[in-house]
Length: 210
Length: 250
Ligand SMILES: [Fe+2]
Ligand SMILES: [Fe+2]
Image (cartoon, rainbow over all chains, first blue to last red; front, side, top):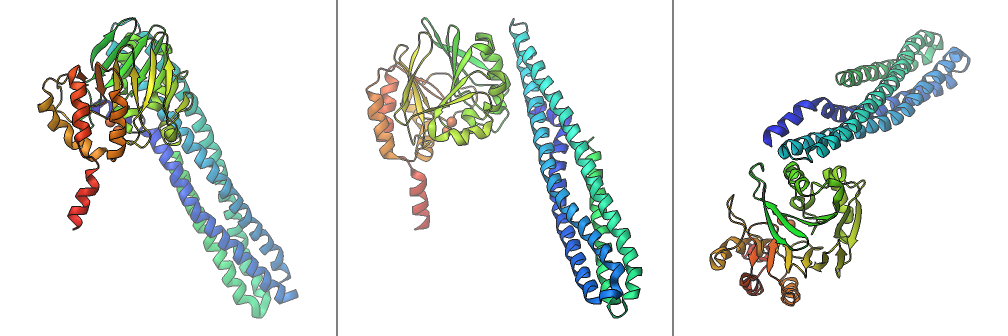
């Protein structure tokens, strides 16, 4: 039975990795959430500065609005992804449970040998294996949805990165406010880069299991 | 897994145990089945690790669709951690177990099987011919705990009461009670928490007509050894974990 157990772990190591990796992704998204909140805050700061700068920073305002929106969308997406990652993890656990049960039923059938009811157990094993297959498909589907959401965050962050680079140029016309606006823009740029890195990392983790 | 038919008149009591495939490091357990025509009851069907062996044994006697009832004396993993797998093998079955453990036992996986909580005072279960009684054995050792008594077969399935820690492959029945005592003493003193609960149980069980007392670990008691056990247990002081701690703190 010890050998049998090792066999399970090898056969289903992929699924095991899946329910672990989706939990890992959910954990990393906590950092993304924090950084996205920093972006929103920085965008609000920039907006306040631009307000004070008045006419001198007119071209800056729509930029801060846009960045703020990207930050907020990222936060909403992270919340959704967290739920989705949990779903993936749940389905992967269910798949593993079905696969394990089916293996144990087959083992019981083999212990029965020539007994007429061995077939009953084999049929049961097949039924459960079919459940496992269904779960497996669901896991893949949910994982794809997860990847799409991650990609949307990445796009948001790319956009806010590009825009904040541009805003540094715009800040030149803000005269005495130039420096503080540039500091904010730089903060946003760095934060966006950081989120993009984490997202790519998460995507790699999920892809490894697809 | 070894099987022994301990009663066979109209319906059967079958005991499974001494599993040679059992992984090392887990306690050896006795599982029971009452096969009563088209209905079968599994008593303390055991842990995940012995599930395959148990399923094979049980299927030799009954189609899984005819396992209509499962009994779990209490919530321990050696009793019922296989529940999530039985849930797939016998989704139509009912699980009879102490009401206080429902929220805990469900952690083992109980999606389809119906949980029927046994009230503290006990209850009855009718199969086809067999009429079984769930006898309260609370705090022995679990705070919600039942034995199963069959007045026709005169068998008491006593769960952890009467358990012994024995080397692998020991005989099915107690042969020399006095010699057997040493294998039971620590188990009962350390796992059983309450002298009051113990004496209350002894009084209740003395009133039953018992030919075989069948614990979940170790050997079964038959004939005069049942009374010997009750006398021995009544005189034994249990709950020694607390006392040991007190003396080591002194
Ligand atoms: Fe126990
Ligand atoms: Fe036990």
